[in-house]
Amino acid sequence: MTLSSSSCVACGFVLFLNVATAVAVLAVCRRTILVTLRAAQPGRGSLDLPGGFVDHAETAEQALRRELLEELGLDLEPGALRLLGTYPNIYPYRAMVYRTLDLVYLAEFDEFPLLRPADDVAAARWIPLSEVEPADFAFESIRAALADFLS
Image 1 (cartoon, rainbow, N blue to C red):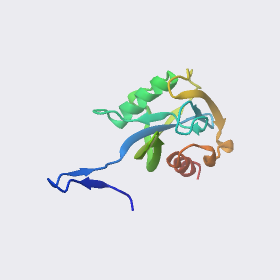
Image 2 (cartoon, helix red, strand yellow):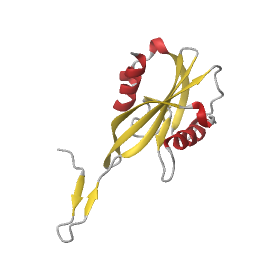
Image 3 (spheres, helix red, strand yellow):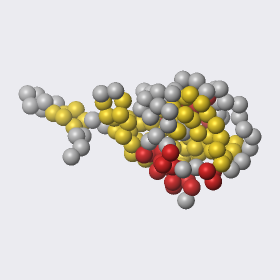
Image 4 (cartoon, rainbow, N blue to C red):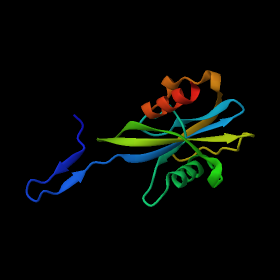
């Protein structure tokens, strides 16, 4: 059973344990996709897609554009993202296990943009679509999104 709420027996207050929202981008250029190498836990050293958590008062698109700028120095135009799908995920961090809903977007490029890995990204590279193995990626949500995209 998954805990989704907790209540106080004294006053009846109910605390709902809602999911956190995260975003990722599947960036495509010339039949390749952009992958990152995680610099921190969870999944340190594993492949991932660029992205991160949505902050308060931020739209998903604003969060993804912010994360891309922080992680890769990549500044996308506001209309450059198209939602591919939403995927539930489990994100273990330190002593907590967070449930997230990951919104995965598509961004298509005609030319390879200049990338400057920083923040949570140890490295970034483009890999041919034919070589993408969803099982090599850190999180179930990203593996599911890649499997959907590749099918």
